[in-house]
Image 1 (tube, one colour):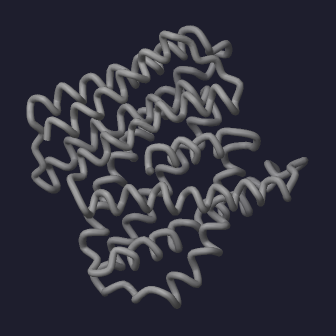
Image 2: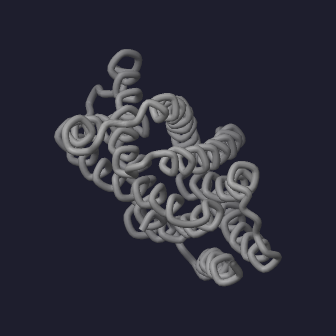
Length: 277
């Protein structure tokens, strides 16, 4: 679920509107929808959760800024696979350091297969689909940095949701306090980006994105509470397959037999990781 919905979420942010504006609209709706849930429907966080939530705010703000910059400079089908490829690799090492998780040799083979598919997809898209290469270098650097923060938030959020006695308290307050930053940034520093924007269409896209975010980020956090963080992170990166399909169907980007073969590698790698555990 997290894999499919995260690809949808990425396409919503990269699609019709400026990535900054799209993210601001999504987060504004997240803030509005999460407020009554956090304040009235779930137990309030225990004292030890407040600094953890504060750390999540800083990590996710950095991630969102890097992601928006990467999407602003690079093609979705290049940036997204690089982000999602570097993310799980760093997460596996982070899960080892923080939770003592160890992969078997078979699982490492699965990781290698999955990453070869993801980075192969990015390389193919970069070689054959990208026409504007002026910003490609900075976009790739930003994508790798974003992948590092994907790993950081995945392991950190797993730590946070495991530290909460009620996981839904952590989820509700996580969405509530991490959703005001980008709308505030756009309202104070980037209002010029709203010129000429169809605000009704933007609001509809933001609402859809917020609902998708609940199930996408919420499901991966619950998965890391229930099972191994590294395995959950690897399985989520099958989102690259969904992203390629979305890019083909909705963003009018080309998918051929070579890219299809690379997508099969990604799915095969995830299966090997799961079966080899």
